[in-house]
Length: 422
Image (cartoon, rainbow, N blue to C red; front, side, top):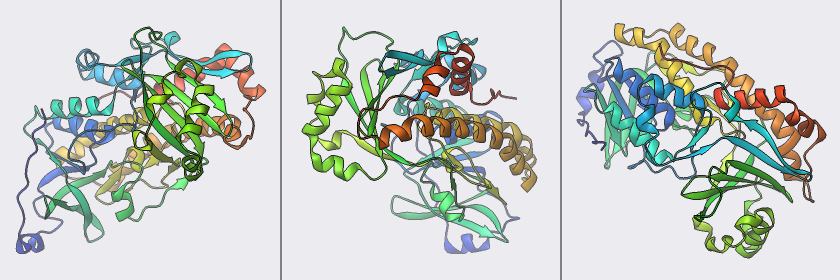
């Protein structure tokens, strides 16, 4: 189990006396205990680097926050010697992405054909994945995690970020660090405090996520299924223990959907998911779902002196393809590969942070370009159509070409190219 470490409250005199050249409380302060932050903390702790992970929540519940661990992530876990134990956690495997068309189902990504030891996507809730990673990091005495720590300020001295001020249990604390990493997600407070503004890369949308019961006679390894409706797109994902449903709608249309009532939503779901038509009655309260605002974007610059942003804090990925966690963890691996030696030497220069962005910027552009293509030719049309949407010919024909299907499978599974531990 994760043990929360309580920090020492600094007096005002102690806070005022510290300088950028003074002794840091920790070598690396990571803000955000999501996949990127947790994995980076583990990788640095394994190298003997003093790491403090600050998580604003008091537990690891991350329902409807992304559950897909793509083959690239499982391979990284294997390189850490953790894959076997990870796969012992309750999970489901998705071996293909299928979209329902007027002429029948069309598979546009087939992971079973990939040449990898893990030819599938692991559906594992973050509520299981994150404590697994953090518990592993806790094996190293140079790691600590502070749960319920909400960052309020960046410590800035001589234009250098020297750590953070945060609130925990009603008290204000200060944590000085050689390097501060913002890994606090798409609504990153660190990004906002650093006054870094992302640039939009795809049209926004809203997703209503909820779960429906799974019956014992439901097909095993059903994978992920996409179906188009009137001004909507539904995603059905097999989690082994239950079905996760993502109801994708146009940006800002949730109030109208809610005003129409749950009965109207259940009728639409029953039409789109007839195999689960007898289970939509389990959706009896809007609070059973979580509305996520989705806006794909990317920062022009991911760093400033003493500060680096990774994962969704640096580049918000669209949920199309389920690549967000994969991409964030690859950021963490590259950051660890590049920064381990400078952190051990106690000297982080701007050029080190620039290398991290340079190595990850092009893969980000490629994946966001791939997502933008799918938005333009699929998602956007579905959300704007007043009648059941028909997948464009370019996508229907492309998905039937082995090379195109192989490329889509590769990009979803590994990103632009795989990342490995040094």
